[in-house]
Amino acid sequence: MKVFRWLFSWWQRRSDDTRISPAHLPTELHYIIPLAERHGSDARVVPFDARLGRHVPYAEKLSARAIASLRALYIEIRAKDHGPLINRWYHDSGEGPCPPGTRWPIYGLLCLFGQLAELGIAPFNDRTVRPMKIRVELDWTKLSDSLRYLAGPAEVYGEYQFEGAILDFLRSRMTPEERDELQALVQRYGDVIERWLEEFPITQHREAALVYFTGNLLAMGADAGLL
Image (cartoon, helix red, strand yellow):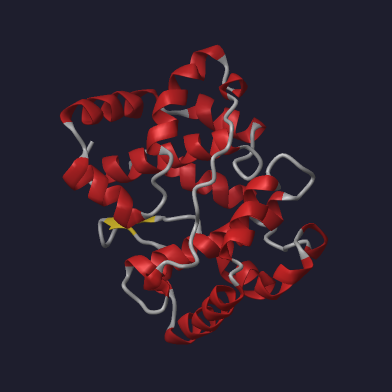
């Protein structure tokens, strides 16, 4: 059985409602809602394909017609210089009343643009509109004492969210010390973390998102035989 398959099914169970609430999004960004609802949530889950023996990003499954629609939206966002605005809204709305069904697909749209960039598809590969790192003060007291060991690794490995970046790190840049650390984490990652993620949704808590994506990296590494 593949390691951490529950990690992906867990989010799928929690992401049934992907309807975006316009009331929680700046009016000037309402034009991105249709395609964010259509693609955003799916783009943030990278399932394992047993036939191919790897995790397959959502971008690889898109039709030419879907990519054409996304290309037009990307060009519009770029022309309006709304990429930073979307990123800032996403990070600022995390601790407020904005529902997860709004935040998750909006940011997922940026993630999808990143996936298309990794595939070398224009104009996405200019990376003008992409997920941006915005420094957020982290509160690791949200972790119980028994899970506090995750804080340090999550701050490092939770930043890897795309298959290309994850596999590049695991195959080419991971040091022996990092491999040892990740292999130890594989042995400890399990149901207790799933229960913690239920309590602290990743769409509302940056710390939980980092823990979740650390698990994603561990799952991909284990499935690929790299950990």
